[in-house]
Image 1 (spheres, rainbow, N blue to C red):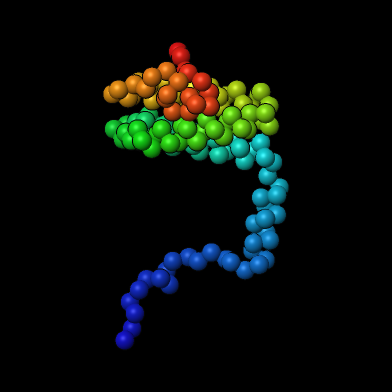
Image 2: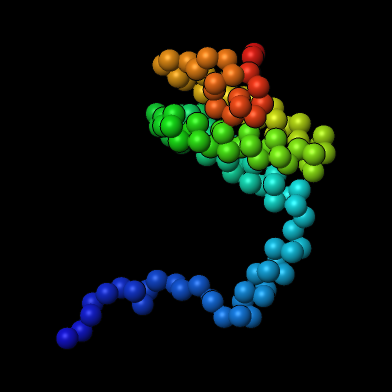
Length: 127
């Protein structure tokens, strides 16, 4: 009996030791500032989508997901800011604050000051 599975069409990752060594070398070449910044931008982008701020999905809104992403972003920036330096950290902190304010506006029942997403790390956010 022949298996008609399409598993042969699925690309498989190269798990050879040589491939793993190359990936480790590639990661070793990326400065921590770049990794932290890139991760922060991904979290910001995902939070914006879940707040309905994406031009592609303006009607999409998932405040639970947005809260988790904003909390994670705030934790990352709180821990990472000393390593980023002001010129890298300032725009990321501004973006975080914008997302926190957008979350407050999108919430049908706003959190008390200091209880919003990420505010356990940043303190209460005000306009």
